[in-house]
Amino acid sequence: MTRTGTHPGEVIRPVFSEDRLRHLMSVHFDPKWGAPFWIDRASQLGVDPRQDINHQTDLALLGELQAHDLQQRPVSDYIPRRFHDQIGQMVLGQTGGTTGPGTWTAYRGDEFESAFIEPFALAAKHVGFPRNERWLFIGPGGPHIIAKAAPRLARRVHSPEPFSVDFDPRWARKLPANSTSSERYAQHVIDQAMDVINTQDIGVLFATPPVLTRLAQVMTEPQRLRIRGVHYGGMALNVDLLRKLQTESFPNAVHLSGYGNTLLGCCLELSADAGKTPAYFPLGDRLIFETTDVKGEPTPFGEPGRLRVTRLDETMLIVRLCERDEARLVTPPIDAPARFVMPGVDNPRPLSKAGTPPVAGLY
Image 1 (cartoon, rainbow, N blue to C red):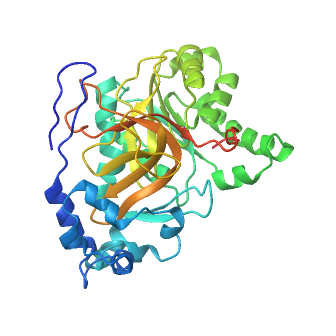
Image 2 (cartoon, rainbow, N blue to C red):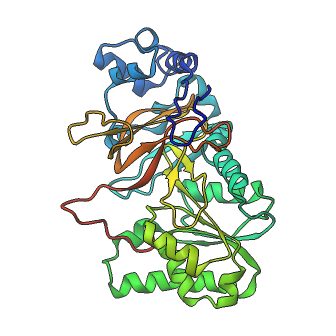
């Protein structure tokens, strides 16, 4: 897995590991030991991926996945049978259900590290994210993968386990926008966060953009200037809001955002420059991003389109999943750490409906 390109603006062309792709086809589509869902799907489509899929472009033979394809069966049906005796040691997580029912997925321990922890650790080192600081994590617990990752992220930068404030994004989204109930719930979360900030020496905040915005309004100036790192998660990050948080709210902090979800893993920024439109890059070659037009046809590299994502893990295979976001593909910066070799996404944002952006409160 290598890349070429030595000059700014030159297209970096990753060499995809086709041997690994063929290995994964043999694992997931083995008639006896493969994943029941994928064995059934291959039979319905009349293909034998162990023979027919040898290159990245061959994945089109498996069609596109939609969210409902991953919601109608037990999570074990998506895991190869050869690993079923290991499910008890896997990391299980469920998506937030922004556009419908939540979807379960699983990661082996090494896959969880590769999908969520290693990308952050390498990006944090690259941009100079602070070490040895006390974190405050404000986000969902329960089945959500972000709460499972937060303590490990902190420890990778030599920080203790984060102080935390839990909230339920599903309940927050059910509350009518701008209603009394919505405001009371948001204030409840902020009050808990301020209890921590007022009594503990917090140097890093990890939260959603709306939560950080509200916090900045009630923190004292010394408290805001004490923040050395801000890590964003949970939802799309508006460029104008990011600039305000960087330059006005937390000007002494290194700001680092990620893009991803429970099903796929996390891609990280590789530049923390203030005012720059964020772009996010996957680690290794386990994630493949594509963009498509309204008919599902691929758009040229660098032109905006709806995102379609493939996850290539032994524990779970997700092929050409249509995401709810739009973006354009970009190549990693020339100074990117060596293992960031695949195309990333520039300024991803939710697909608008009739020109109206989604309403977001805490999450």
